[in-house]
Image 1 (cartoon, one colour):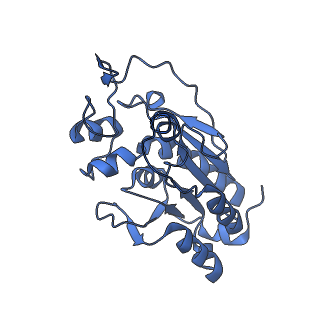
Image 2 (spheres, one colour):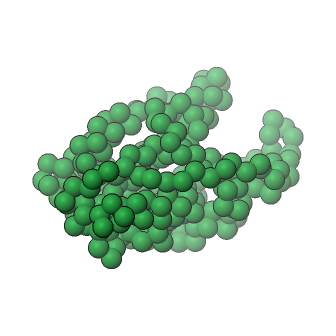
Length: 241
């Protein structure tokens, strides 16, 4: 893989990574620890986001960067678009019971824009029917975390080694269909039914800078993107050498 000159120019001490649909910064923290300078974009105010933040529609912001040429200040892009249109809960239990509402699938438009950047990029989604390639799948047990939180990653221009999916050590704690189960993992989503407290979610995922339940339930553990970012940055540096 030959890197364009503008990508090589960004590979300084802290190459910049654009974090789209950034929420509270679970993904961002992992990339930061891997060695990137991270800039986040989200349509909602995120005062707990730990790095430089811009409030904007992520797709519009990315399109503007491409049109202006300012995208050249970045070395890579991560995107975690809203998952409700394709996640397992929405297309499974909620759909079967007539719950919820229609959700817009942003991934096709997002992918077109990401490809137009010419930059290495990743699209993250949970298990379900989201139209993403499962180039890499990660689980909390791979990192010894207190959550399962399976996530799939579509990678373009990223060379990331796969990790074996370790057997889970037990169940996710909480109520399921009227029966209570105990186990080594907490349910870091929703509320009630034995779901994790805010403090439990913080500890289980390694996210301490926000105590907003909605932000924690939508976050991915920084360990995931630390793994991805460390490998990807090494690849970028080797190619640019």
